[in-house]
Length: 197
Ligand code: DGU
Ligand code: CA
Ligand code: CA
Ligand code: CA
Image (cartoon, rainbow, N blue to C red):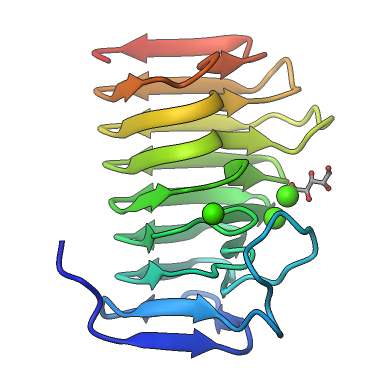
């Protein structure tokens, strides 16, 4: 891995407008703790990036502090994005859509990595996930349907689970992936399909 060439302090959430692509060009983006958040477990922090419907975020490194990470509103693509030290969480699906996270890595989350707060399909492909509470958490107490698909990924050191949900209809498919030390793996997930893991 080549270290980022430059670190940019983000004072105000970077909004990637509908249908647009933001190319981070391999630079590191850190939150201004005074305006976005300090990356602790305090709720109510602001995201470093906000992706509107159909937006793409690529080639960005989120450094410490990462505040509330990335928020998505509808369909979104996150390609080759690295979270060096997850903040309150790494990415949150705020509005329904199909979100694809392809390539990249996230590590060092005190609790959640990917938080799903609206009905969605989340695909995680060729990703490295390590050292967090759970890789994916559907909003606690919610019973909407979500679909999780994990492919070609490496998952290590999750205290609680790879996926935790309170919904009896939510489902996960995991293929061609490797994992170790992932707690309960599927926490209350009623529909699991796995192959070649
Ligand atoms: O405990 O609202 O963790 O989006 C309830 C909270 C929690 C959310 C979520 C998030 O579900 O704050 O960060
Ligand atoms: Ca939270
Ligand atoms: Ca959050
Ligand atoms: Ca952290």
